[in-house]
Length: 269
Picture (tube, rainbow, N blue to C red):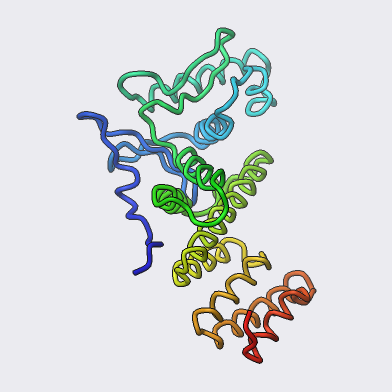
C-alpha cells in the first residue's frame, strides 16, 4: 500500500482548541481564510498584507518598510492611516482566544506570533520539511517520514496564484524549490529502505511540480528499471527528451543517455 496518499482537505484545517474552532489560513494552491467550515472574507490587499507578515515572520517589520511595500503611492499621512486600518481589520477578522496572533515590538513594529491559535499552511509546510532536511542522509525515522509526508500534503499548488508582486514571485519560487527538496528527500528515504513503489511515487510527485529537473528524472528512470518496468523507464526517457527539446532546445545529458542505454541492453545499473 502506498504511503503517499492525498490528505483529506477537511482534516488538515478544522482544528479545535477546547471548544473553539481554530482559524486556518491557506496560501498554497488556493488562498483562503476560514474558521471551521466558514470562510472569512478579506480584501485582496489584506490577504496580501497577511501573507507578507507570515512569509517574513522571523522579523519585526518597520512601519516605514510596510508602507513602502504596500502604500508607496499614497501621501505619508494617508499611508500611515492605511497601515493602521489594515492591522486593525486583520486583528478584528481573525479573532482567536488566548494570546494574540499579531504582536508588536517596543517600537510598534508588527510581527506574526506563530504559537498563536491560527494555523498557517506555509508555517506547517516549511516546519515539516525542515526537520527531514536537517536529518542525516538515507533512512528517516518514522516520525520524520510522517511529518514530511504531511508537510508535502499541504503544498496543494504554488504560492498565492494570481498575485504577481515581485516579493510573491520570489517566495513562490523558493517554496517550489523547498517542495522539490522535500520530495527528493522522501524519494531518498524510500530508496534506502527498498520501498521502490513509494520512492517512485515521490519522484513522480516532484516531476509534476518541475518536470525539467533532470536529476529527478534520472532517479525515476532508475526506479522504473529497478522495479522491473523497463518499458516505462524508456517512455520516461522519451518524454524527458521531448520536453528538453521543446522547452530548452537541448538533448538529455550524457549521464541520462548512458543510463537509458544501459537499460536498453539490460545492463545492471
